[in-house]
Image 1 (cartoon, rainbow, N blue to C red):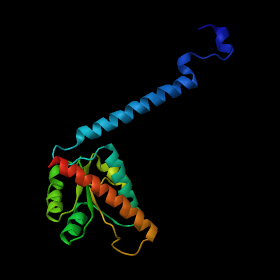
Image 2: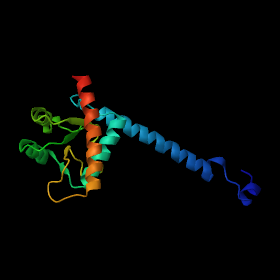
Image 3: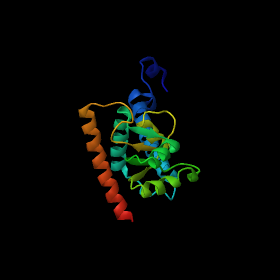
Length: 177
């Protein structure tokens, strides 16, 4: 490179901020797509009915809202205990659990208790929606809190989201079976 160009402050095109930003964004988009692809690849073959992208978003929104309202049970042990005690709700199960034997009995319990259930691709996303840092195998979304009272407005929003997601889950389940 010519010394006179260096003195005037010219940089090669690949060092300019604009090109660095474009390269960074391209990598980010590629890594997001790759992450999504890896999530789908890691899903167990028995994870049926598996939620699509739209239903996943709605389900995670419902889980987040239930977590804020303290209407959420996390983990296999709590979910199984609540189902056996007769609690009703929506069971959301992560599809990328390894070994899968940890949760294979949960759908059977849900079917016996007539509780709708749905698989989502990632346990990490499920934990994020449930406001925990630890990856979660399954959660049970209840329509009323275990303890305490929530405001009428929050209760109404929670029930509306719950009904919408359950309706789509039942449609998806009926189309599979």
